[in-house]
Length: 101
Image (cartoon, rainbow, N blue to C red; front, side, top):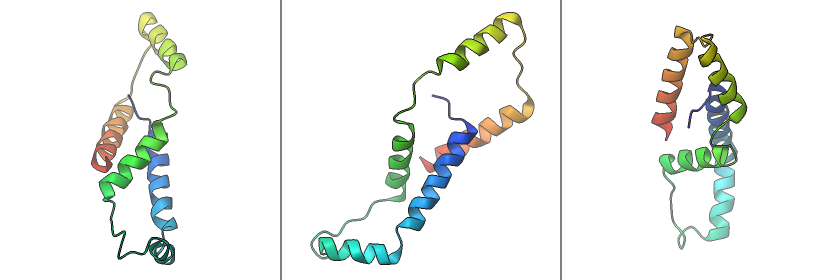
């Protein structure tokens, strides 16, 4: 599956929002509810990132048929072009996602 720049930005924004939403006060409330001494657990950053990515992409189709048809047509007609900047953006974006996941 190819991940777009918008998906990467959305994922990073969701990740930052989740971290900000789980403030120390909220953690104290949760600890009281579950009596921290009995239910002491932690979730790794990798697990949090995995969960975010999984939720963000679970409803996405495996193949975007409309985009695939457009690109296939461009390839057949010889008009498909990709700039160096687009290639670099995708490489960096995928590298960032690999680091998070």
